[in-house]
Length: 270
Image (cartoon, rainbow, N blue to C red; front, side, top):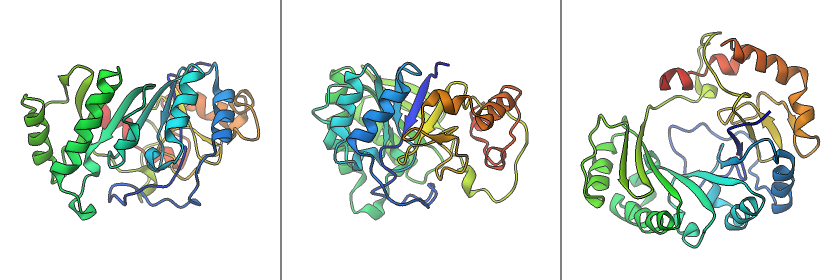
């Protein structure tokens, strides 16, 4: 089994309270460097790419730089998703493959102007891009601030980003992508379809801050608990009855768990 990527939640703590994110119902936690190293050891050979993203803001972790360096030294390509408010922490990082900047996280409620917010991001993002890091500005066009964000991006990179553009190259190693807004499955009250495409457990899975393995990064509360990497090996988890039954169902485009039935993430992307 070789995954395209494995998500690792190094913290479930965030510096923002965005309206589109579900509330964290778990104990606020930070993964220790030793725990992170244990996860890297147990997923070695199962993937080349790790994403520091599930819930929480990865740049809140006081050892974020050390974690990136450690993962890179172990042969992993490191990618992370951030709201961008703490991006200065990454200015001196040389080992980051990609950074996804969720610009829809911007809000005037956080007492920072949009111009100041973006200028800080531009400054660090361009330093990272010169080192070979891919920078991806992501935006949900449904946000009220989207039009101004697009104008400021267009002005800074001397190009015109149209509302219809799904992707656009802005500079060397710097890109823009438009994402459809989705509702986290945990926030949906109505039951969805029992059928539908999902690549979970085939090309990715996620590890929460307490070591819990879940099928994907949208199981933010660890509802589908497949096992724990602090207590067992990934091979054992993959061979478990729950993992295998879900794996077979997903291959047949069937959703057997109620959380999965409430999820339309991939249907929105098709």
